[in-house]
Image 1: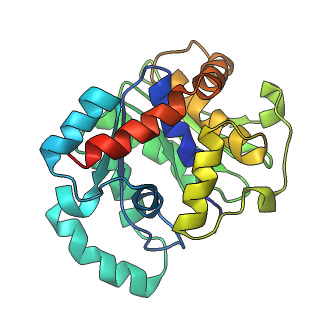
Image 2 (image 1 turned 45 degrees about the horizontal axis):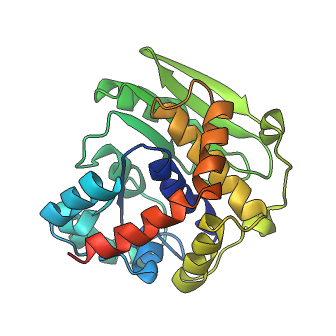
Length: 250
């Protein structure tokens, strides 16, 4: 299982002044999901909807735990874990985000899904989106090589290949992004937000930069990357995580 290194990007995005609504769940088809990591960091996953709203308003980050906000979702967790395979539920999460986000960075597990999902987001009313698939199999923008991107902009969907080298980043090996269980990934995420140099930080900044660009706070991905770096370097990103933990506990 590739570590949730890029998850640290949410703090960097919020630190750059955007509001981030992450809709997720515990792991079903992988070793560690976004909810598992945030739970290990101390975020209250069972927070009531009004508490999540407060997190979004006061912190700029909210974790929308699917089983709490979509009653039917909790009945699917058991069968999904038993199958251990990716299913339609891996795609439904981002498409059923209760926050109604109009701008999204969405990672998918198959390159053939980037364009259809970008068109689906357009049909659902999204203003802007990047649907990405790392060609090494990562369901986010990767640092090991090219990433396929289908970008929704001005009502049009265009698909292209993004290479980290084009942004001045150094490629890494896939094992450099390897994660572990929830506790290990939580520690990794804290080191990323503290600015510890290495591939985990770079892939996190790369994905954060894309989100800042899609969110309209940057004119280009390169500009978004600069904003993400500043968010981490100033400590704003780490403070966002600490604030989220506190506010989520009500």
